[in-house]
Length: 290
Image (cartoon, rainbow, N blue to C red; front, side, top):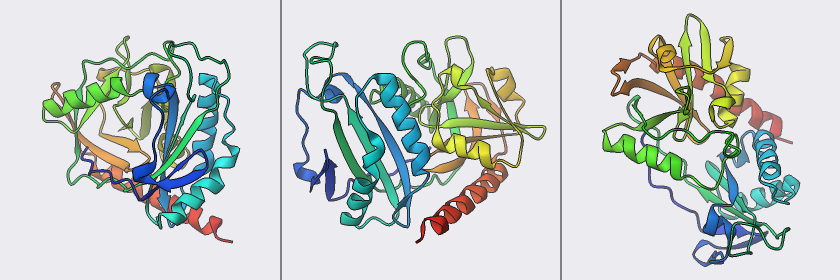
């Protein structure tokens, strides 16, 4: 999966204050920097409107609760719209990062309740790949939901980064990660679906897969019945088409899985489902107009 260089736009919002991006600094004592103690959301923006804002805030709120970070996310939308206007963003990506805040040298937060740090940035949307995605079966297992809350977008991303670098080392675009039990989980930065005999399959969240917003919306829009479960590579081998879903890039066709030699013809399915998603984006924009 090819991604273009991400450009951060001129202004950044930190704790409700808009600053020039080159002056938007955090403390070295910030727990998000020190421990990855936080989470984030990446929200596609169309016509200056964050798409599926409500779904993203539901996941963000659930993640804050799971991490026991005391932060009210209900006030974020006016700030996000203000930043989009100040950066003159019509099409792009809005990134919201929240950490526990500044405090403590060790893992235990001290004091117990800290003032969270909230950062908002606007980014360019990644360029869509010019070819179908090639997957590499990663040696890095997906982190278990018994180890940490994997259904939200945690600030720590070393597991996914290592898997993605491994894939690139082998000439592939993306990494497919499985659980310690050998169940398909997701790609390093996308959820995975596959079509077999008229049914669209995807990994259950118990595999360690992220509760992706695009995943959720596709399951609602799909013209095919959707089945979640704990599946193995044997199930994927029988697929007729395989796709990845990602908020910033939409729905991507997958052509192969190395080193297993699995191949699929997935472009038609990706095109069909992207058309449904694009229609949903348009409908959401029409509903958002006063």
